[in-house]
Image 1 (tube, one colour):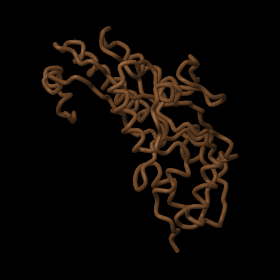
Image 2 (cartoon, rainbow, N blue to C red):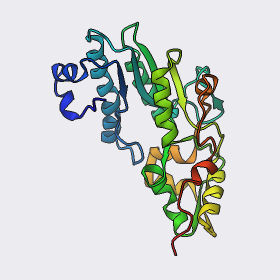
Image 3 (cartoon, rainbow, N blue to C red):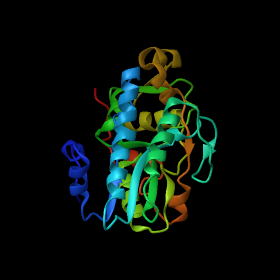
Length: 261
């Protein structure tokens, strides 16, 4: 594996040199979205995804021999907040995040024919001790179960171990191409997640955070918290991929048990 740091993107020549001889390219670049979206930060979100992908595609298109597969990340934020969608449903949402994903995917699609393109639409990636879950679990570890707004919104997620296995599966499966949802099969609501986490950490105080408070704090980015798309990993399931954590209970079973006192 050849990791690409910032230095590799200084010029087209340096990027082409770093990619030379690679049979597959995986593009996971992108600034974090879990913060307030000012106009300046929206530009950073765009440039870190579309700009980076554009440079990668340009380099890949000049490679000889060319890689066999290009896996480029996107997100389930591509879909509308209402309804449930698999990869065969050509429906896009209307939010900034949906437009960002569309532009990101369009840039990846400029890779030359003959290179298998897989667009990996990520759900929220959960790891036991870091990232999104560490932030989400903090109040539960303190004994406080937090539900966001009504709690009826879908929470599309995937265990980090399943994510890595799914990416490896995609790389080795010649028939998998186009958009691929990387989410657990379970249709989990925020309220159901809160109940599962409350049981796991024995959190007894239940609190609902109103949507208006999140909008005040996060602005437009609060839409990711108070609403959420339902994305079914149809292509992975049809191809025979087996999730180790298909439900939130399986993910929780890997965690420490007790709440902090």
